[in-house]
Image 1: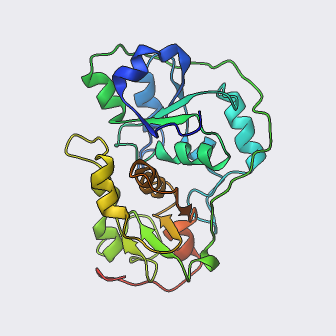
Image 2: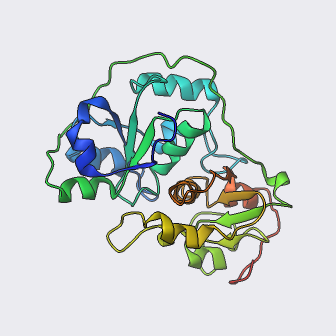
Image 3: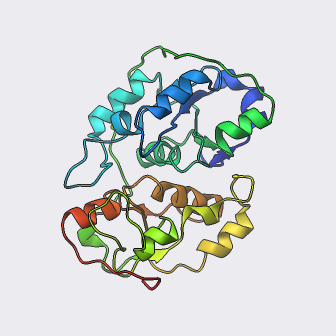
Length: 270
């Protein structure tokens, strides 16, 4: 599956649905039970629910709100979801891929090439008129074999000579609002490329040429960040759609940065 495109459209998924392991990663910042509830009210047939907090993150703390889980724990989670290294995985959410991209990146980080994000998410599936399923799906457990270790990650102390992207909304980057982290602003030197610029008016990813115009002029080693290492993965995916190399990810992101009382900048300038 080397070289697989990071996106798949609803009709292509529907045509060969039984060939995929589909993961529903709907999540809400203010209501941690909403994702599972909306999943059980309707989801792509056969899709398993994946919880951002419980399945794709370690407990929050000094390392941020969504630190990476222990690699062994992540391997066990993948097995519990019915995944093997040979699985072709499709991930989706209902916010343009901003949450589901976390699992896309985590799988790519451990060398799992067979993963795509459903362009347009659950709404695209509905808009295409495809069937849905209600209630939970219990996958057949497997053992995810092989070494599982995350690559392409970077820590706060390694950012000084890197081009750092902040994928948060402009108002949060500028420090005009800050709903969850200790203080408003952004990492000094970080440039703002919010996830909104990755999508068109329908909520689907812009084409490769458009995305290349956003990302192609970045120089040096590029690092993506956000609030807690989730939306950053959306920018990483957009860069791959644009034909660029997958960037480094600062998983701790602004939540780790501010929890350790590092300096911040406010306003529109890096």
